[in-house]
Amino acid sequence: MKVVAWLAVALLILLALTLGALTLGAFASLNSGAPLLLRSAGTVTTTVLSQLGLPDMEPLDRALILTGVTGVVAALAAYIKPRS
Image (cartoon, rainbow, N blue to C red; front, side, top):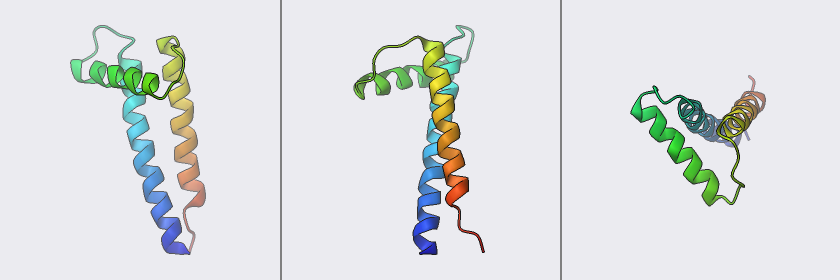
């Protein structure tokens, strides 16, 4: 059972890191002076969310929602981590 829990933790950590990068890109897209790589990540965020069928929303709202989702995923990974 611990092996399954460790695999779930690894997947959730990977998901949290991916969402963190998308969140950083969403915040970077709010600033026109941000580096191009970060603004491109913001564009990817917009494209992915529109393909998921989520309604268009303000960029700040999108960034704040992604921040909350990333925090929940990271907290879930920490919560299910097997303890020895």
